[in-house]
Figure 1 (cartoon, rainbow, N blue to C red):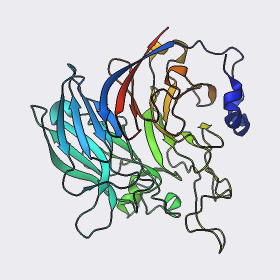
Figure 2: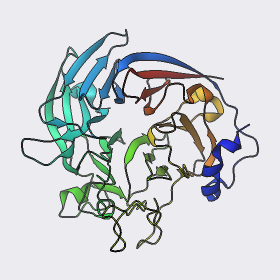
Figure 3: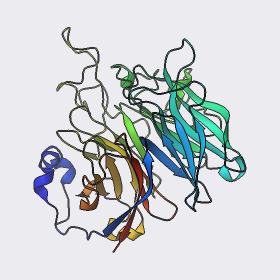
Figure 4: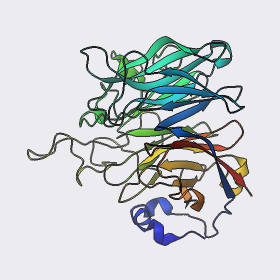
Length: 385
């Protein structure tokens, strides 16, 4: 049975989402956690090659490492020229290209700053050499994603169908960005993973502005995770202000309602107060409500992945890592996207500190990264019914 007392804030704020929760809770599998790697510093994300080697990033040191299936590791690069880190921004997401077998390409999302230039976030395509010992720059897929101090840098990557790449971004703590169609901040973009050009079926594909053409959804605060469900739908995880972290089911042209702009003369330029809800239904047009929200206070949701059949009744649930919450939240949704049940596994509740990344591996296990700043780890979580 669920311990409802620990979820009171979320339940109070999410009553409409909980309609239809089954009286009988789904059977929960036993989880086992093993440490795959330790001694790391702020590992942000990881991705798997076809041979089951793992690429993982470390945010502040701007380091990319390859870990082979036999457990040996090789540093692929550290701090390439102009790669930039500050605050919440650095070397963030990594994704293996769909055509890796022929191109040996992978993609990163990271801070960038050249001499005298303003900081920004870029999405870059690289080629791993045949010996898997180094990487060379291929091209910049997307440049000019907004950044300032490094706060709210986003940046999540996920493969879509065919050769599509989804890019979740942060609003750079700049009020107008999430609702501006000329800014790549506070958005989920959809591009061709080889060229970086907009997908032809994007909602604003006929715009004269290249960034506008790339927009798939808007009105996001700080997208930290993207996960593609077995039915092909894409889901985002974003951090709230002081409340309401969100999981969103993405729908083309959807506006998810974040609009932290000055509303009166005394307000700050970036207004995160009580009058700036994560989903502002007073905006023009229809705003899409979250599939799940944390309530008050925030637990700082981050990476997410859909789990597999070894999780039994929880097959297809979304596993969401949390930083401030220092736990894993597992969310079970209906096929239509309504919330059915939540679970916080005790084996991951506070034991490893802050959890950042979440990726389902080729072996069916769930891989998590920690984000404590010293002796961080990559964890492998397996389920047994």
